[in-house]
Structure formats: structure tokens, C-alpha cells
Amino acid sequence: MKKLLPALLLLAAACKQKEYNADLLIKNAVVYTVDSTFTTANAFVVNHGKIVAVGNADTLEQKYFAHEVVDVKGAAVYPGFIDAHAHFYEYGLGLQEASLDGTKSWNEVVDSVEAYATRNPDGWIIGRGWDQNDWAKKQFPDKAKLDSLFPVRPVILSRVDGHAIIANQAALNLAGVKPGQTIAGGEVETVKGKLTGILVDNAVGIVTRKIPEPTAPVVENALLSAQKNCFEVGLTTVDDCGLPYTMINTIADLQHKGSLKMRMYVMLSDRPENYDYLFKRGAYKTPGLDVRAFKVYADGALGSRGACLLKPYADSAKWNGFLLSSQAHFQEVAQKIAAKGFQMCTHAIGDSANRVMLKIYASVLKGKNDRRWRIEHSQIVAPEDVKLFGDNSIIPSVQPTHATSDMYWAGKRLGDKRLKTSGYIYKSLLQQNGWMPLGTDFPVENINPMYTFYAAVVRKDLKGFPEGGFQTENALSRTEALRGITIWAAKANFEEKEKGSIEPGKYADFVILDKDIMKIKGSELPTVKVTQTYINGVKVYDKK
Image 1 (cartoon, rainbow, N blue to C red):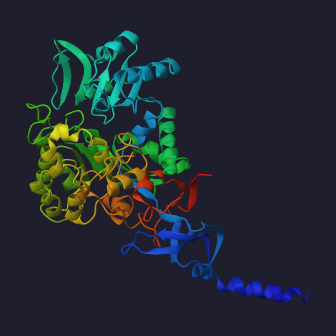
Image 2 (image 1 turned 90 degrees about the horizontal axis):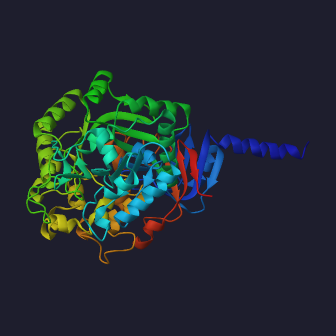
Image 3 (image 1 turned 90 degrees about the vertical axis):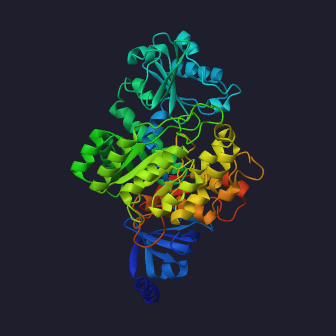
């Protein structure tokens, strides 16, 4: 007993030195806090799902008794990545549909659809991901092969950006589409009096509205499948852009049950019933779900020539694209959203669409403000309009991989001069307000935020093309790119006080990478892997 007494006294003294209990200590790390001064640390402490201290491991270990200690052995740790513009639910649905990503010809698309139809013999055939710009023949396809293979079963295949589809005759018949039919803000392609099956922008909805609503198990599987893949690439919050209000309870229920752990910032789509719901109820806010914004579409996509341009397309001399609604509609929507105190987030690709929306925003916002209204994509902006972002505190929400996906053919659409002065000018846009959120627009692009970081900083594709980078005067620094997928993305959602950096009081959402993206060669960035992802200090993904 005499021999045990000194040991017990030492243990008691050691315990007394530790002032606080905690759930988790991360140590021997290179912690990029992404705080206001971009400081680094080598350890931090988590308790009850939040960060309680950041600093030196020796100091923290003396102060805290942590129930779990994780020695990351020098690995780099970052705040959980936030995708400021995505289609999370749509991506999850797409995982259950025919994948057409990377197809190099229409024949390859048809082969993929046949294979899918064999595996899934019932119901509509739905697919997404084809892009005629990746084919040797860069024209839109026609539906003849689909009609011969599926004379009765409806087929609808979305272009990669979702702004155009090709549907077979069975689907067109169900929707009552007729040759020569016109629709504002859309196109029903008709050649020699016959439907080709191509529908662009607002015309897409004529057919998609006929698709049966997914069942509850399909919806749940979509959300959880999307979550699994997003955790694997380090995403801890996603902005889902353009959902119906009916999805709010579904998401909230799954989060309450604990199966859906992904934090979501949801923008409701531009529909009367969505305005009615949120205006009557008010903003919906929980630790996992934030609903206070509306997603509006000004125009279509550049690849399908639906983007609204100030001057005609360089490869279609009499065509400027179109707005998807009247300017009067956008003005009305902006005024009522502002009156109710919500956030407006508008998809604008072409320089004309950007000008229209920037001027409408300016007329409502009237100068500097903290409403954080966003232009989603801000893809082609006339040089003389750039200042409107800064003058009215309008936030450009951009997706860097759009530049490296479009660079092969964007010059054909715009002409080299307009591309150089107006296209994908991310550095110029960043300078307007001093901060800018970054996203992917997945499933249009890959979900991996490391590709976002790489495209923003290096401005090359995954094969290292072009050798000198694409319009590198608009590349971002690594610090800017990291802020763009963490704290600036949180700020775009009014959430910078609760997430986006590793600081005391914030949610313990963080990721551990196998390489330090702030130090490795630019060419290595696309190869970086997430080893662990944490939400609320709980591991939700482990690579091992």
C-alpha cells in the first residue's frame, strides 16, 4: 500500500492539472484554421460537437482531459469543405439513373442507355451527362435511334448542364409536344416539320413534369447516397440550389433521425408555392438545415446556346440566346424577396443576363448592404458591368471547374476577344467585394472540392492542359481558393459565425488530407485524397 500511495498522488496531481474534460483532441497536425489572419496551429480540442480550443498540443494536453486523442502524425487539417453551389438531391437521384458522363459520341450514349434499360426493365428511362461538345460531331443528336429501340417506353436524357434534353417520341407523346411548338424562354427543336427530340431550357419542363414523382424510399436513398460520396471528398455542407418546399420536411426528418448528417443550405426554386411557404413561415434554421434563400434562373447555359448574350454567338450569327422569364418577372421577384428579408440567388451565365440581373439587384439593393444577394455562376460579365458587384455588395458565386470544362469550346461560342475580357474572370470578380464563395454545380461538374481548388489556382484540366494555364490572370491564390471553399462559402450562407474555420465556438466540422494542398506542387492537387471527414467532432468518413 505504501508503494501505491506515491503513484496515486501523482495521478491525482496530473488529473488536477487538467481543468476541463473534452470529447476529442486532434494533435500533431498542420491545422489551417482559416481564421481572419489565416493562422496555423498543431492541435485543437472538441467538446459537445464544437471546437473549444485551438493551439499548441502540449498546452492543450495539460489543460484538457480528452476522452479520445487522435495523433494525425503531421497531416494537414482543414475546416470542412463547403460547396456553395450544387444540386445535392438531384445528384443523388442521378446515381440511380443512367450515367452518361464522359460519353464521346451519340452512339456511346445510346449504348449506355441500352445497358441501363436491360438492368432496369420498368418505367421511364432517365439519364444525364451527355455533352455534344465532347463529340467529334458537335451538333445536337436526334431521337431516331431512341425511337427504334424504345417505341413505347419513354426516354429522357439530360445534357450535362441540365439545360437541354433529348426525349424519344414516346415521352414527347405523353407530354403532348408538337412540331413547331413555341414556349417563352425555351425551344422545341423542329427540323423540316419534325421533332428532333431536343428541348432547351423552359421547354424541358413540358416533358419532365410528366415523370412520376419518386417514391419515399427513392428520395431517401438519393439523399443518403449523395451524402456518402460527398463525405468521401470532404464536404460537410452543401448548398442545394433550387428545391421545392416539400423537400424541407423530408430533409429535416432524416437529419432528426440521424441518418442524414450532411449540413444543407437550401435555396427554394422560383415558384409561387415556394414563396408562399417561406413568406408565411419565415426562415427555417436548425444546426443541419438552413432555408432562407430563393434560386431564380435568368438564362440557360453556354454549351446549349441558351445563355443570353449582349451580342450574337460567334458560331451562330443571328442568335443571342434568351432570358427564361421577362425582366418584369425578375423585378417583381426581387422586390418581394427584398421586402420579406430573404436572399436572392440568380443563375446568370451570359453577359446580357448578368447585366439585367445586376441592374435589377442594384435598383432594389441601392448601394452597399449586407443582404448577400448572389449571382450564381457570373460566367460571362461585360467589363463595364463588373463594378456593379462591388457598388451594390452583390456576391459572385462561381464554379472554377466551369472554366476548365468550357475552355475547349467557349471561344467558339463567344469569340476569343469576348472570352478574354468577359469570360470566367474570377480574380476580377473577387476583387469587387474582397471575398467570393466557390462551388462545383455538381452533378454538372465532379463533386470533388479538390478539383475546384485546382481549377481556381492552376486553371488547367486534369491532364494538365493547357501547358501555361487558361487565362491565368484570373487564377486565385491558394489562400483565396481555400477561403472560397470554407469561410467565404459559409459567409455566402450567413453562417460564418458557426462554420467555415477552425475556431472556438464553431462546429467541429473538419477534414484531414493525405497531402498539404497549401504546399504541394500544383500538378499534384487533383490526386489529393481525404483520409477522414468529421462533422460535430464525429467521424463520418474514414479512408482506411
